[in-house]
Image 1 (cartoon, rainbow, N blue to C red):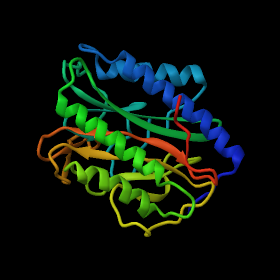
Image 2: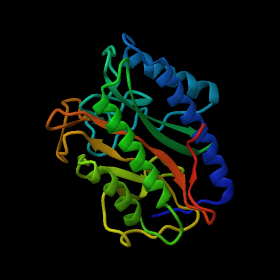
Image 3: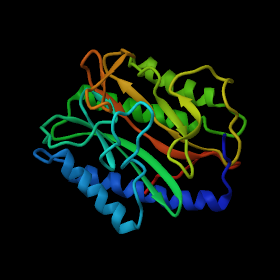
Image 4: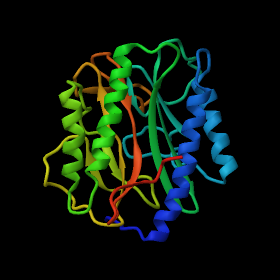
Length: 255
């Protein structure tokens, strides 16, 4: 069932979105050579605690997961696409890191993700990240009343495929509100004019995931969570929570 949010609900989601934006900014600021993924998780936990928010990630256990998720961020490094579990791994010069974070505040969720490099960036990694950001911007621009989810998917896919990047099969965005994952599902590739109609009050987490090697296939680590590229090439993941309004798309997870 799809829930359309009132202006009051959107205002509340904007506050949870600010918490997510702050957590992501603090994590990126703290990331450096020698810093562990567990230490980055602690940075995000402290932001949530200070804001009086909780994590929709911590303890989350969908049907595919063998164990509940044990952290408040997903930390995916290099060939990990999404859902990386923070470990004691210490970041190295040139690592490509994707951080996904959510917050629950006053009963409403926010969800966003960023990708960045640690130390000296490789030109090919920066191009991948920049293209993922362009794909996200294109998806957001298509999130207008009168369009459908297929229009957002088509916008994202056009940017990604135009740069010859892969899009992991089955992964994409989703509705969001009182729960982190709500209907409708939002693919990262699709046909314009198809899918769920975009109406005022619909809120979507739009999240392109791009694979440098151009493949769409993926594997899952023994931890049951971490999704990796099958060709070993790097991936980037970016995301914003976006409301559909009569005045155009409203990004709720900006600082």
